[in-house]
Image (tube, rainbow, N blue to C red; front, side):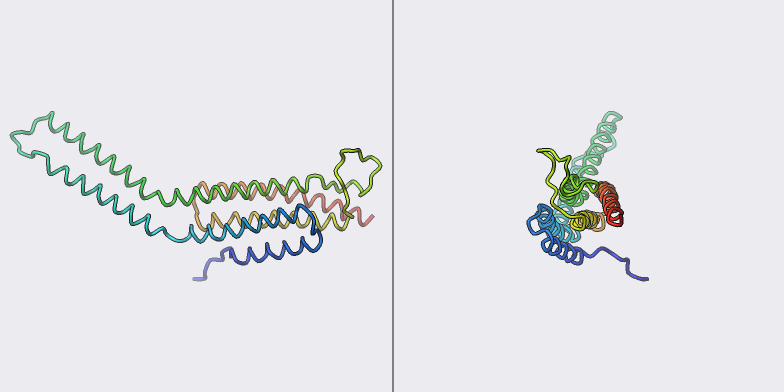
Length: 234
């Protein structure tokens, strides 16, 4: 049976590093470069998060099993205090005893569930926080491409005092939008690392939301690129 193809965090990091260099070559003083550098920091942190999530927390698991065993031992030990003599057994005593044992078993079951799911909940919390950082990063990228209007020339007679500064040529604007698109796509891939390592319903849902957000942003960016390319042919 062939191994399942998986996303490689190292290769994604290498791609982001190369993208940083490409942006620095063309737009060394741009805010997009600052965003991409911050994204590289987040991606490196993601790799350490993925390594932590992928490995079992041995100490936490041992502690959980120990607490569960102590709870079971306490339940068994409490049963030894019950007077099982038939002459002392009444309907009232049986009902009270059954209720007490049922409550103990219910509490022990809740404790077992809490301890067994503690590791996954801790990992889910870290993954959710990291995914929220990536979601914010997508919105920041959206702000950078927002004012890049492909229908307006560098110098327009209709500009006002507060109009956005437009200093890019058509070729530069295409490259800028292309870099925005690549960064957005890589954000999507970095977020997918979390669902790959922790296939939790909450994590997978958050990753899917980021994927939809990135796809929508890329569609807006490539609509602008297509307009610019069509104008270049005119």
